[in-house]
Image 1 (tube, rainbow, N blue to C red):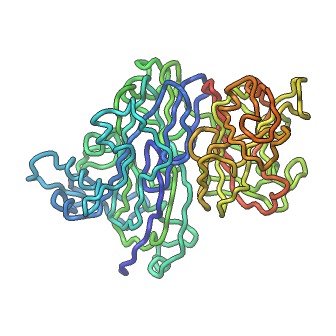
Image 2: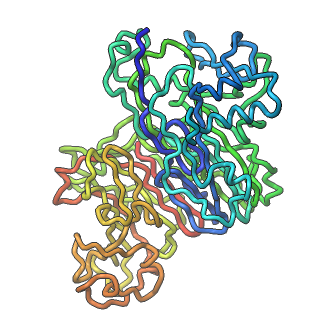
Image 3: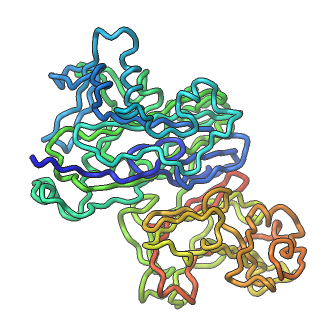
Length: 547
């Protein structure tokens, strides 16, 4: 076999769980008035409330260095060993990764071994977030600033058959118990060309990223070196209860609210909840692990493949809540809005919408425009309770991907209902937010990017379409929170040359949301759109999955 290497490209992982890929995906609130919170390692939101999730994370990876070899080695009998990471159902030509530990070691050999996998052969630690799991165990997380806003947690560029690794996460729910879900989805997958051994491999299929189907994944509640829920002792060794291919795993995470941690650490009734799944106690550090492994076989079919994906945690309060999670609406009528539907590689579910050359929207306009609510024959805002005002909006977000770092990208508009007082047209007010004007802007080419009204990376800022001195290209720095903070908003305090105003945006009733390209540059824009989410301060939320 030719000694060829392949890379699993750089990836970031979400704020509460992450492994083998790029990090997190959006999550949503439930459909009742619950406090909620969300932590991610890539571009997600943290909703306000008294349920606050704090997180820490430690990456581990077995590089078969000498310090690991002093504690464990490959077992001679893969069916009778200490730890066994088996191949998947479709990997008949592969064998398990099987480890035997040193029986003569004095102390916790499991803990010692996994301690060595948290650093490379030179003793340099792999990625840690907020001090890692050890810091969380020492002093807890509540009362700290242990949030996450897109840090990298997994970064592996030379994975080979027989390798394994993952991420260990610690989280603490401050003040109240909560339901917890693992969320995520595929971000990107590429073959990156084909090497000669890859092209000659009988398992290689042109156009298929086999790495998604060869890597196996398991997740657990509990420390990986203690008693994780996702592993069990069997006659063949300590091995996963359930395992999935990476492709299957990410599909499960992108379905609805995500993968629920059904047992929790307490019965929902003890936390005041009514759901069937368990809750996690507040003011207690909990651990979650995600383990990945590439079973042993010739492996040439995965050479040069790369994958990136999102992972994250989502939590809702337990009390007075049935734990049903995110309300997801799937939209499939892309052409009606001037888009084309694409399959594979979306951030929620399987697909996404993209620019459509020569496809007019239902208004016979050549540009793309997705309306949400307000008109017949467009997507309604169900299950959000209507009417609601600008002041009732907790956050709005959506995700885009372009081949270049485009300042001209799908923008967001909010129209309000006419009320007979200073109405601008058929609507009351028109507020616009352009990605090019976002605060803390970071939009790498070729990657899914989240634009959100929440503070942090790529925070949208607003302008009033009909205010003198504020043109389409004016950068105002005005956030949603600024518009909601007063009943007499004055643009002259933010924009030089803007006339003085005293506008009550906060109490304006919402008519519709619009995500669109502009008539002046739609024909030169090439980009994708997915996962439009609207959260209300009441806890009601809806995510529009574009398929």
